[in-house]
Length: 229
Image 1 (cartoon, one colour):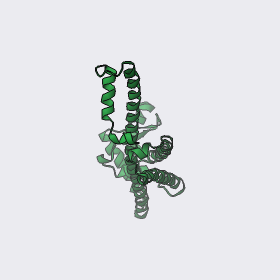
Image 2 (tube, rainbow, N blue to C red):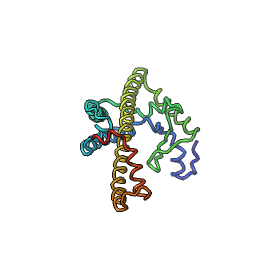
Image 3 (spheres, one colour):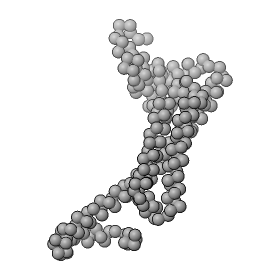
Image 4 (cartoon, one colour):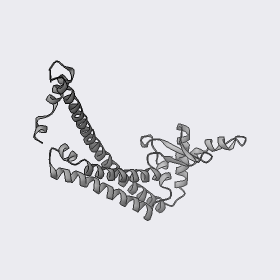
């Protein structure tokens, strides 16, 4: 029981467990992910359009694979937008966050609790987490069996859809990051070669000069196929 002599701030802190949620499985996080994923997919399309043959070169000139890669981003963006619309227009259990708090295990991540004084969520310690899970379970058990089964069906359906989109997004983003890094590295090498060429030209391309030596070393590292492009 909370000591009545405590300040409002202290009482709110001690009662955070009364409104628990799992940090990585809550509606706010899912909706935030959907917006971010759509934005990243849009940025990827701009990147492909502005960087000309960057993607094609990274895929060894395979135009069919290039189009397929672009379509993956377009499809993912459309599916994220569709899920966002579904969450706004279709039935979503009001107790979505509470359902996963009631079925909580440590493998699900950090349990959070709402602080009514600070008006924000904060991480719970082990005792508070256990108490929060118990609170959520007690409220869920007030439902009829049918209501509970319906809630479980919709909550799991939403979570599975979210996990599928998140997994695809992370894979595509990782691939895009690699392509961006490779392109950046290539541009940096090209710029450095140009700088060294100018300096080496002034030095008469003497091999013992620093600029000429580095210039020749960088040229030797460029794959032969690049000279044919």
